Image (cartoon, rainbow, N blue to C red; front, side, top):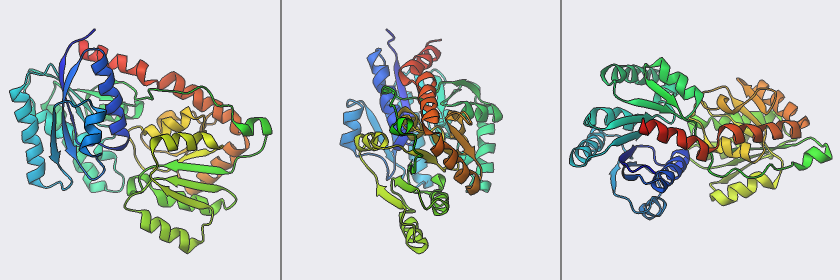
Length: 360
C-alpha cells in the first residue's frame, strides 16, 4: 500500500470535475495517500458542508474566484505558493487550465508535478481570439516548465497536449460503478425509438440552441434537456416562439433521479457541446446502454464508434439523419455503447494506472 502526502489544486470544482475528484480522492485515501485541497470556488461549486462530507474533512484552502479579477487570481496563486512552501508534498496534481497555469509557476520544484486540464481553455470555439492567446500561453509554460507531466483524461486531450508540447500520459476517466447491461425494450418489440435526451448546463459551451434546431426538424420525437444555466430564459423563449411542444427542460435533477431517468425509457443520447474534456454524463449514458449522437468536438468523439454505437455530426442535417438511423436500429447500437464503457471507461481499473505514474 502506498503512503504519500499530496496536494490537489483545482479551479473547476463543479459538475463532472467535482465527481471525478470525489472518486479520485476516495480511491487515493483507500490506498494510504493523504492529501490537502486548494479550491477555487465559483457559483456552481457545492456548499462547504457538502464538500467536507464528500472529501472527509480534509485540510482545505478556499479562494473565491467567481470574479476573475487580478486580485482574486493573485490571491489564488499566493495560496498555492504559501501552502507548498509551508508543507512538504511528494506530489502536486493541478486540475483545470487555470490551476495548471498558476500552479506551475507557484510550486517549489521538490514536488512531483502533474496537470490535468479537463478540457483545455484554448478549445473554446466561441472565443477564437482568447483561444489563440490561451494556446500560446500553454506552449510558453511548457517551454519554461519541463518538470510537469500532463495526465490527459481522454485520447483527444492527449492529442491536444502533444500539440502544445506537453509531456503527457493518458489515463482515461471513467465510472466507478457500471451496472449490468440493460436489455432495451425496443430491441424485443422492434419498434423505433422517438425519445431524445441531453444533460448539461444551459450555457454556450453546450450549444443548446442546436438541440432546439434538431428538435424542430423532428416533431414526432420527444426531446428532454436535463439541466439549467444562463441560457434557460433564451431556451424557453425560443421554445415558445417556435411552438416546440416536443421539448421539455427539467432543470437540474438529483444524480439518483438522473440515473433512474436514463433507464426508465429508451432514449437516444444527444450531445451538442462545442468542446469538452470528456463529459461524465456521456459515459453515464453509455452505461445506461444508450446510443449516442454527438457533435464532432474534442471529448465527445472519444466515446463513439461510428456506425456501431452512434454517430459524430457536424451540422443539423447530419444530426437529424443520425438520430433516425439510431432509432431504427436501436438495440444494436445500445449494446455497443455498453461494451465501450465497460472495456475502456472503468474508473476503478484506470485509476490504478495513475497511481503507477505517481510511483515511478
